Image (tube, helix red, strand yellow):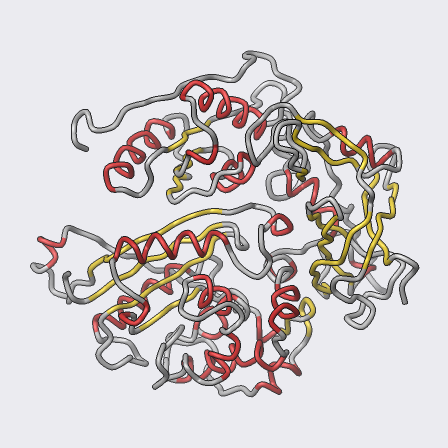
Length: 381
Length: 144
């Protein structure tokens, strides 16, 4: 980083120290954070970057009421916070965020709100306010907001099913796709109900796989054997670890913030985009992605897909590898969406979009908990 | 001979110092929420400061226990402990005071026909053990 270009402007510990039996882990993070903000004369609304280890940065951001444009959950043990400071300095210099909060809290002695049953334990917010009602993983959690979306915009079951049908069409062109046989809307609606209103074919696959990327400076990139794919813009955000606490069940705040940041960084408009990947763990995600990224207006995505705009030859080819619904889904599918964008921009995709120059890969983390957006091009700006 | 069925306990909340007032409330048959003394925001889940303005000056109050059905799924793949209940709805209700919370719907068929979005609902407490009482919701005036 540039020497002297970033400074620490707030610093504090928890109000009490040593034995604190009346605070849970997340409470310790928050107490220290509130004290540091008071020290700096800042409010949560002034913070746009969150870094932490132990707790997820999603949990810390939502608990404190922060909507960040920069998130660092780097968790490498006791020195994680040194790394957070280093990343934060780079992030601030790069304009990813202006004011980064780094937090730590640990109920090492009292063990309050730490460990125990399930994700985050029975003392976590999920453990107290969601798990007791029987959600059984992504198929019955990620899907909860959708009926609200469907009612608000009058979406039909056939329109949701069409998402799976179109992606199967793309998968049919991809020899590496897990499921390639064509399906109809009727097939989708006749498949087993997993969590009403979602059928089996509207849920992602469960498969094995992997992927990797190597990045270097644009100046060096021309010396490598493959066609460089340049990063034009990036975005990230988190909203909440609790699906029940999403601000708006018809829109992901993390998608909106991440997408805006990426478009602003890249300095492009929607009309410049030739190819789009939207992480599709379930069939409703392309609706949210298309609208939250601003490609279509509110409630317009179901008709946009129904009318064929995201098919081969359509105006916005979407999830051209077949997506999580038909290509593969190992658990953290985002890597595969990135790989497909790179293939498209190298001109090496099985279902190649002719002349694609700009591609966007939009990812989701957790269940509408987090988001990341990468805009790439095969032309250096 | 059939194998004896393996049973799993349902996951239960473990109250923390910041949430114990909420769980004391459900035990007493009250749905308690918090309100910021400075900006008047009502919020949930519980925490000892306001997520809107970060004030630490907040108060508990007894909520009406009334709201509307905001969204749901009807789950066919049970979580551990829920094997005997499939299919069951996992719902989110919007309380009249503003906040939303996850819950289960009781006293009503677990079908799309019976579970109509925006229908009025009211809290119905289910004592699980001496410590934990879960707030569940039922249609106002009874369901199908």
